[in-house]
Image (tube, rainbow, N blue to C red; front, side, top):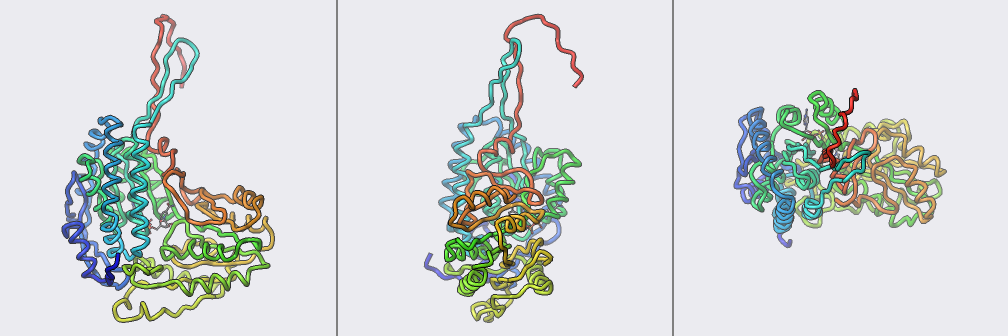
Amino acid sequence: MTTHHTSSAETAQAAVNSSLGGRIGSFVDGAIVTGSGATVDLVVAATGERFASYGDAGADGADAVLESARRGAATWGALDAFERAAILRRVSAAVESHIEELAFLESATTGKTLRDARAEATKVVEMFGYYAGWADKLMGETIPVPGNWHTYTERVPYGVVVAVTPWNAPLFTAGWNSAAPLAAGNAIVLKPSEFTPLSTVRLAQIAHEAGLPDGVFNVAVGLGATVGSAVTTDERVGKVSFIGSVPTGRRVGVATAQVGIPTVLELGGKSANIVFADANLERAADGAISAVFSGAGQSCVAGSRLLVQRDVHEEFIALVSEKAAKLRIGDPLDPTTEIGPIITRPQYDTVRSLIERGIGDGARRVTSDTLPAAVTGAALAGGNWVLPTLLDGVTPSNTLETTEVFGPVVGADVFDTEEEAIARANATRFGLAGAVWTENVSRAHYVARAVRAGTFWVNSYKTIHVAVPFGGFGDSGQGRSSGPGFVDEYTQPKAVWVPTQATGAPFPSLSY
Ligand code: NAD
C-alpha cells in the first residue's frame, strides 16, 4: 500500500463507513442490528479522539443473537459435511479478497499497526482454509466389544458455541475461535471486546456473504458484564470458549460451570525467554525484541521474562537495548511503523504503573523513557504511547516476575546454570509459552522438555499455525483451540450399539 493515512477520528469513521455502512451493532441473521443498551464509545488509540459510539446489545440483543444461533445451528448441522466444507472454503477465499480492507479497518479503529493487522488478516484466511479441509473428514470409530454387536461412534457438534475474545487481536481471535467450531458443525456466536468489535462484525458479514446461512456466524456486541455474561450462561449454548485475562476467565469459568456449560479458557502468560551464552546472540536479540515488543507487547505469548546466562548478560542486554531504540514507534497506519499505541486507555494506565512498580521493586531501566518526536507532535500527543521498555535486574521478588504487563515491557535477569534457568522459567502459575536460545541441540531439547508451557520455541519465538495445538498450562488456561484436537474440543462422541444377532440374552443389570 502506497497511500499514507494518518490515524484520526475521520480516518476511523471513514473505515467504519466504507466497511460497515456506518452501522455499529450486533450481527444477527445476516444483518447489523443496533443495540439499545448503554452507550459505548470507541476511541482512536493513537490520538485519544472518540470516533464513534454504539449501543450495548443488552439482554434483549443477546437473546435475539442466541435465538438466531439456535436456528442457525440446526440449519448448519443438517447440511452434509461436504457442503459445509465447500462453504468454509468460500469463506477463506472471501476473507482473502478482503485482507486490505479488514487490515485497514482493524488498524484505523484499534491502533494495531497496519503491518500486524495485515499479517493477522492473512492468518484468518489460513484458519478457514485449514478447517474447511477438516470439515468433511470428521470420523467416528468402529469399536470391537464382547458379544455380537456392531458398536460405533459418531462426532456430534455442540450446537451453539459462544466465543468471547479480547481486544489485543480482535480479527485474529475471531477467526481462531470460529473456524474450528464451524468446521465441526456448530453455529458460532462471537462476543468481541467492547473496545474492538468492528473487524469481528465485518468478518461475520463477509462470511455470510460467502454463503454461511443465517444465524451460523452471529456477533453480539457490548460489555462483558451485560452481553458477555448473558451469552455465556444461556441454556441454548453448548460450549463456551473464552480468550482474555485470568480474573475474567475465572469468573466466566465459574458462571458457565454453574449452568453446566463446558468451557475452553485461553488466558494470560508470563513467558520466559532463555538465552544461553552459546546462542547466536544477534539472532537471539532479534528474537527477544520480536517476542515482547511486536504488537507493543499486547500479546498473550509475549516473552516478557528475559533470562540471560551470566557470561553474556551485559553484552546481550546492551544488544537488545540498542535494537529496541531503533524500533519505529508511531502512527499505526504508517506501513513502516513497528510499534503502535496501547489499544485501550485503561491498559495504558496499567502498563505505565507496572513499569513504575518494577522500578520501585529494584529493577533498572535500560532503555530510554523519552518519547520520540514522531508521537509527541500535536497530531498524536493524546495517544497511548509506551516506548519499548527493557528493565534489568528483575529478580524473583519483583512484581514483574509474576504479573503479566501486556505491554512493551520486558524484565531481564541473569542466571548461571541450566537448572537455575529452568526453575526460574517454571516459577510461575502461568504456562503459556517460552523459548530457549542455544546452539547446543541436547540442551535445547532438555530445556524444551523441562519448561512447563503449552508452546515452546527453540531459537525462535511467536511462530504459530492453526494446524498446531495452542493453549496453556496452569493459569494460562484449559483446552486447546487449534490443531486437529479441535475435533475433541468442538464435538462430542456418541456411541451407538446395534446387536448383530437376536440372541434373546438377558439385558445386563448394572448399577452405573
Ligand atoms: P478481559 O478478560 O478483560 O476481556 C476479555 C473478554 O471478556 C472481553 O470481550 C470482555 O468483554 C469479556 N468479559 C468481561 N467480563 C465478562 C463476563 N462477566 N462474562 C463474559 N464475558 C466477559 O481481557 P482483555 O483485557 O480484553 O484481554 C487481555 C488478556 O487476554 C490478557 O490477559 C491476555 O494475556 C489474554 N489473551 C490470551 C490469549 C490466549 O490465547 N491465551 C490471547 C490473547 C489475549
